[in-house]
Image 1 (tube, one colour):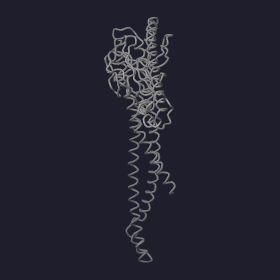
Image 2: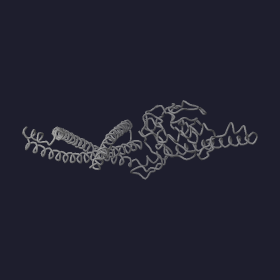
Image 3: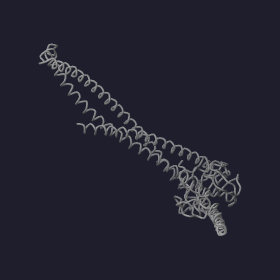
Image 4: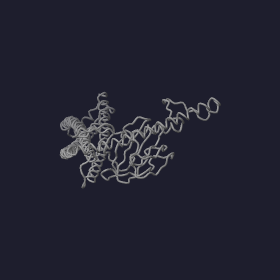
Length: 423
């Protein structure tokens, strides 16, 4: 009996923890869905602003593709929520079954008690039960028994009422769960209808874009040329910084040969398990590097209003044979928007690439580059902090604000979206 009670208690605790976790997860899913829907609205607005009285462009296609991706994310989110609701419905059905069985048992026991009380209902029978006791102590025991018996009946009634109330609450909760599931199902159907409309919109857009393939090819070629120049410039900057760091290291080594004790007290680095890197030549610079990598996936975006119109790496332009190969990400934003440093560091260079101002910042062994600025607020050698405005976004071919954001680990180009916060 004791074992059964222990098991029942453990099941109850598990159920409560599952319900609690469910509630928190539902809130997280709903919050995430709202964020995605806000992103979709932002993408729709951006697309509308560049499509007015303008020819079809790659920027518009990228926005449509990202909107479709976000729409799929909303539907996945709704499916996850539905699974949670189904799990809760299953748990509530199981609890209702348990309470019904418990209520049946309580009613059966109470029925037997009533039948017994009915058979011995007269006061004479009760008094006779006491007065026929063999001794005074026996009479006291019998009186105590009768009192306990009445208390037991009262507890039976209390437990029946309590279980009936719990059962009613569970049935009501189950009804609410089913209503919630119905709402989520309706929303999923609605999102799927919108998804089909957006897929048709994309197909029509791709057809129009395909008709301009020759013009698009020229645009892609021009962009590739600019990015090659940008890539060469960044590579030269990184090479220069590495050579300068090596030169400083050689000078420190020469000083060490003259005064070992002095070198140990002034340039020695603390013990660390990090792989030795020439760009991390002081504790302060190493700290910046560690801070940058520890914020992977949590760095702020360089502009407040940001839509990625072109992703990192090789991507085929749908409906054509054309392939983009991007060293960074192209971010569409408001024309003249403030462009901010994503982390603390030192401005290595302010330079011009294809007529657009560019800033590269060194964060230890990491580098970030901000291309297509209409103006610059910093100078070479300046120390910057996270969130500091370094310039303003210039326009793209569609007349909207746009920057190219690049991240390097030394000479290796990496996907900036892996380093920035999810939006």
